[in-house]
Length: 319
Image (tube, rainbow, N blue to C red; front, side):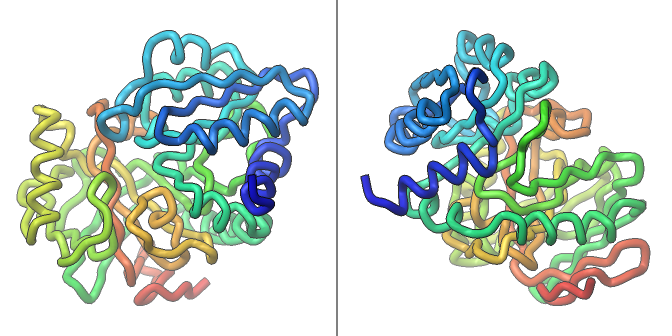
């Protein structure tokens, strides 16, 4: 396998996860991401860990639970990594594993090209960006997001934990995505009001040919309009068949200077200077809604106002 691929796998196992001899290291993958799973499995063995590789068929949507045997196994390991087609991030299985003390990362939708490109950078830079943004947000109560495409939404985050996705997961219970680089929080249920206009990409849909407009009232999306991508989003949410799918679940801010918009939400939501907002489940990171689906959408050049202070203006950091 080519050198860049091996280097990326080594970055994940040694630098990001710090897998050590004697630890139990679980690699969860599916039949569509097996090449990446195999590379991580081999690096785990080289690190001296008791390395396990488990392969499942791809899930059908982001946030769908893995098979029960995997969920049970997950609770009994020291370290994990999950390169999968659909996201296991917002699943109860992942939540329980981290609560049991496992550390690790999910890699939903990772491709070989993204794997090589985004995991070759210095993650200390990403970590520093995340820490800087955390300091600007840590005492925030109300946040407003605007954009020149029509976004104007206000939501409350006071009392909710701010999560730092730095890419460095060395301690028990540390968790995030790889590639990494964001701050994210579950807004208080019922607090979001206004309009969201996604103009970058949406999870499970990809790049947007035209913006998708969402009207939000008392914490829920009540109207979705736009072109073909808006229709697809409505179909995905309707398929879940419950109100919780329309919950305004997450506010996130990208911090990774190497990320670019490619139509894959794993990378897109990390783009430096962007904001993403998700619909659906937030129970795994500080919220109260269990929905069985979690769909992020990207706002490309946002303005972010925190407690009356402008933190980002048209995609440019002011801190």
